[in-house]
Image 1 (cartoon, rainbow, N blue to C red):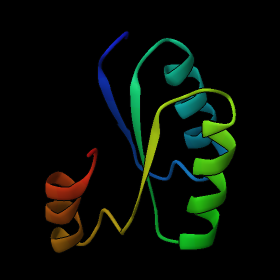
Image 2: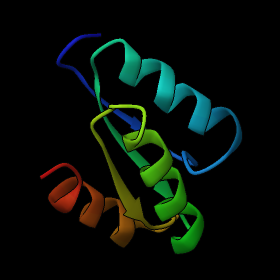
Image 3: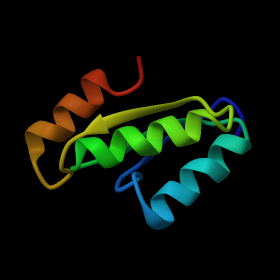
Length: 76
């Protein structure tokens, strides 16, 4: 998974957060999404402290406009 981009919806907690860490440890660049901005920011900071390149995107994947923004603004 080295140098791949992995998008994980619901990545600010639980299984999503664990997957972000695991893919990141394998060399992937990670984009996690979440609806709660504070939880998302906490997850991004925690994952970065592990030396993983991660970006956060606050949005709801059930909202088409949020998906469009994610595609446009996701990993910079």
